[in-house]
Amino acid sequence: MSALVVVVAAAVLGACGTTGARFPAEIEPRPAATATRTADITGTGTGTGTGTGTGSGGSGAAKPCADGHPVRWSPAPPASMPAPGVFRPGSIMDDIWRKGDLTVAIVTDAPPAGSMNWTEPTLEGFDVDIAGAIATALFGNGGKSKIRFRAVTTKDRAALLTDPNSGVDIVVATYTITCERKEKENILFSGVYFESRFALLVPAKAGFRTLRDFAGYTVCSTEGATSVRKLEDAARSALAPGDPPLTITLRPRAADCLVAVQQGEADGVATDDIILAGMKARDQYVDIPPGGVTAAGDDLAEPYGVALHRSHLDDRNANKLRDEEFVRFVNGVLRDMMTSGAWTASYQTWLKPTEEIVTPLAQNPAWPEG
Image 1 (spheres, rainbow, N blue to C red):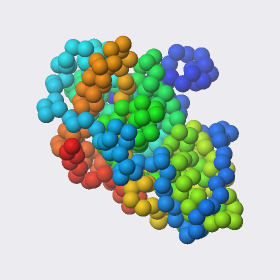
Image 2: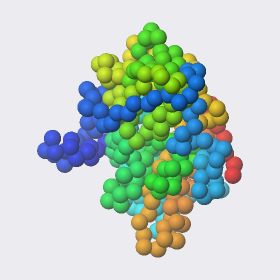
Image 3: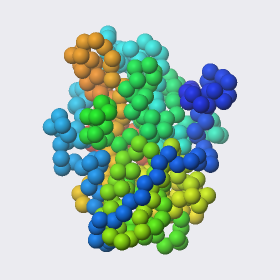
Image 4: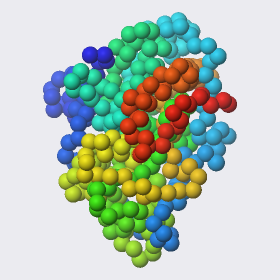
């Protein structure tokens, strides 16, 4: 086994009566619980069948964040990376190295980003490779064995990062970079390592082709995801006044939404195309209709970044310096993955089969300048 996977969900621990377990309980889809929230969306648009995706929760690059930078901006990586284990005393990298492990929150039921291979057994996927590269840069060869994976749901990602007692160092969990998350949730992000897009998954041959086709039906999404705001805004534009409302129902995990469709509790799933591609690969009876949701500009873009734990020191200036140094280090890892071919190799392994569905950042990306 290449990495230690620990269970931390209190409900699971309580049920098992143990202090830990080998694998997270959230790995495989299970029957969904009662929806976290439902909302009926009525139309205000022309009913053309396409959404404009103008929600403030989107990633729209045209409008800068409060700091004056574009949403995808992140501090430049260092000109040269430090050797593993040779870090500035007092830096976050040095703290992690001395701690002896890198604690990574990750989704465990969303192939090809992250899921369990039970034949090994180990976690695998594109996000797992990103985490592995960061661990290797910290600990050297064998660094992947230093990872402690922690299963996370969409809505819990920010809470883990802002809780000084969570123990989480980074989150690599299809985490979309937004101005709102940077500003209101106080989240630190790396630069973009992959760009997905908002899309819809429906039962095959069900006749759903555009968002307006969902008038009077139910679409499932995950609590705390950017897809919820995008779906709400796109639906308001797509539906015409007088159309039956579209109902949005939420589940803790994207896999729960697939189960909801399979069990007839929802008529479609709205989330990132990379996650939907994984669902389609597992279920031949679902499909992703082309052109189901369209938008001007990049309002439906889902740029993924590594989210980093903020320091909790009394000296705010030292806090800022430590944090920025860590962001630059992670950006250096991502840059080196892109220039060395490691990013492309991971893409070929996990995402190449989904090219007709997903929208990649680039097949041979270069770290953005500035």
